[in-house]
Amino acid sequence: MNTLTMKGNGAAVQNGVRDTQRGPRLPRARTSMTPPRQPVPPVEGDGGPAASGQRSRASRVAAAAIFGGLVLGASALGAGASKPKVWYRTLFKSKANPPSQVFGPVWAVLYSAIALSGYRVWSQPPSPARSRALGLWAAQLALNASWSPLFFGAHKPKASAAVAGAMVPTIAAYSLTARKVDRPAAALMLPYLGWSAFAAYLNAQIVRKNAFRL
Image 1 (tube, rainbow, N blue to C red):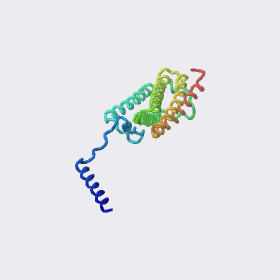
Image 2 (spheres, helix red, strand yellow):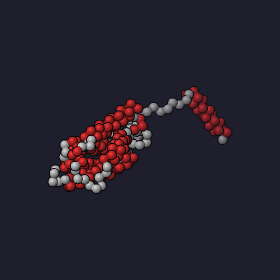
Image 3 (cartoon, helix red, strand yellow):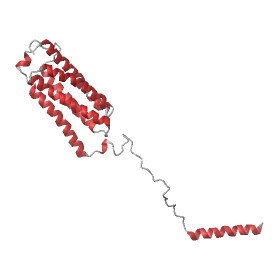
Image 4 (tube, rainbow, N blue to C red):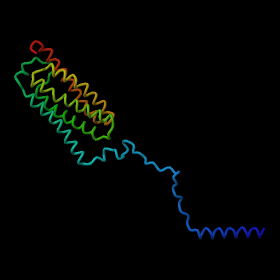
């Protein structure tokens, strides 16, 4: 037993010496059979590269200026066409028609909400819903900008009633689509949706009450 033990110990010592002489073991080199590590794609909304927070300051400022400028242009077009005119005063209107001085402050608030809503949607990561929402935002603004020139400028209440009737579902579609992208952006449009529906009703009442002269 002692002889075997000595041999076993000697073998152990020899292995230890050999291991010492070999030096530290190097990590195994990657072979062609080892699959490469795949990068983990960022999840939308987790702060990854696609997050809106990583947009440059210059692009955010430019986008805010664009949305604000578009809305301001539509507002200026409407204000220029809707200056008090004798023709409008002679029309029969609904009893629910507010005084003329109410429209200016109301539209100032609504236009601000429209611009902010569009900017918030643009600020979100790219997606099909975002693209559809931006398209609907542009469509409703185009309809908005055409209403005053038709009604006040061209004296065509029937045509403007058709535009107002198209605005309401367009704004509603935008709000529903924007809700998938940014809920505050959708909520910002709800007062505008309600006021546009009310304006469409007033326009329709003018057409009905003045059918004999239109």
